[in-house]
Image (cartoon, rainbow, N blue to C red; front, side):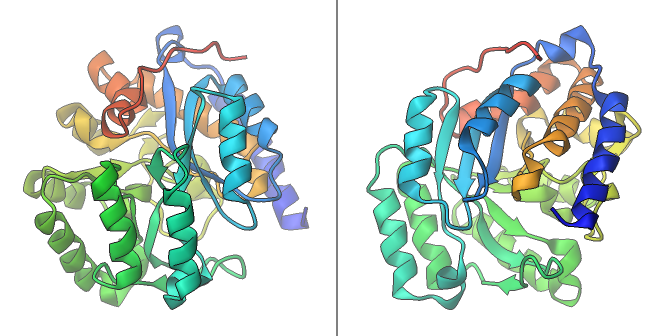
Length: 313
């Protein structure tokens, strides 16, 4: 691990005691992580160990790096009811629109163990030397292929658009995204990372489109404090910021809890500290809204069995 990564881990270790104590009511709420990822550097059994430690009932888990579909579905098979494998779409072949991408997509779609479609990258800003900028418009064929699959299988289409990072192209991206929503009004389109959108824009989209949803990944103090990206901050201290709390209470069916672990070192204290913070946020909500955000919306949209509450170890 690099010196910078070690510093981040140390910082998270200092934060964790601040956030770790949730109210008994919040601790009893089942939690589903509706989107996280693993690569070949992750020890898969550590995912279950950490889920157990944080009291996470189920994870919809995607792939990146050199993780193979066979390894992911075998892992899910060892832990029935805990892991829902998600089909991978992203990668260099996806961006370049190469035949290899379509072959890989078809291979996964023919595997019955998959129960979800992973995020589809549309606009992804450069992340230092770790991830390049990707720009793939919704009407391009490599996006339309997984969209057709999602519609056929009734899987939500998770759109990855970083609106704040898009800057000069922001309005064009919004136009394209809203066209997608209007073209397929009966299909759910969650925006991962809250779309990097402020509360007023989220309110406008909710009012205009009954099929738009918002995933909470990266939208918390822990991620924001350790990144230069324009992620949304949904918290004031250990409580939800008033504007975000108001939106979740008014529209409890539109927000989905997700963490989106990406790198191997996310599967550790960084993950557990976010779970603990979000349990504080759940404790700040009325019961109906808390349960909808924590697990019920994921159960409804991905047609999952009801999650059971797990003890926090």
